[in-house]
Length: 214
Image (cartoon, rainbow, N blue to C red; front, side):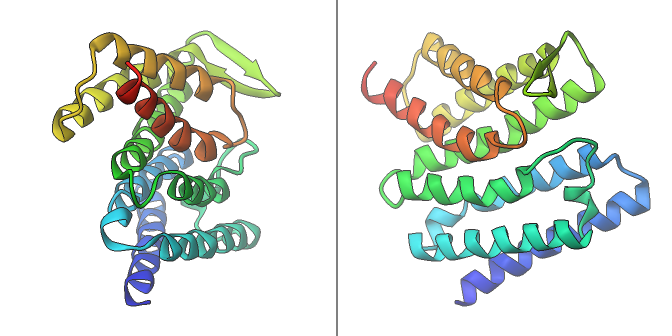
């Protein structure tokens, strides 16, 4: 319980600090939201080495409640104050929970890879797509952009190459490009923050497919 409490307090402090920075430096809500998303993803990458599956499930359940309550009460505007309808903040802990169920404790690499792609690539797509609205597309009433998808693809390629090199996973450049393309299409067609649930899991699945089949 000590580790669970530590992680919960750490992430709540992250929300509070980002809220302070947003107000102090007048950060755009989209940018402050992605700061939290990336920092949270990095934190979650340590879960397999410090927590059991049951402990991770409990943390995820706690944060579904916290994110839902703070959104309802107007707290932590750094993660909730965006100019579109999204359930990304509430969906993210669900994505972590499902990825935990699918990959842990046996496949830490797939779990961590999914968290990194979900954190970094998704954030780059959101930031670049918002400020460089190259060829906007509409899916289910929400705007996406080709520019955002290109940035997601490039970021995923970079993350994949560095991740595979660091963990000694041998995959060809073509496999990396195909993985990045599959995940980019998946991110492009999903709206309302649903990709926070699906991208981490799909990333781990595609990694394992190309690692064991190709």
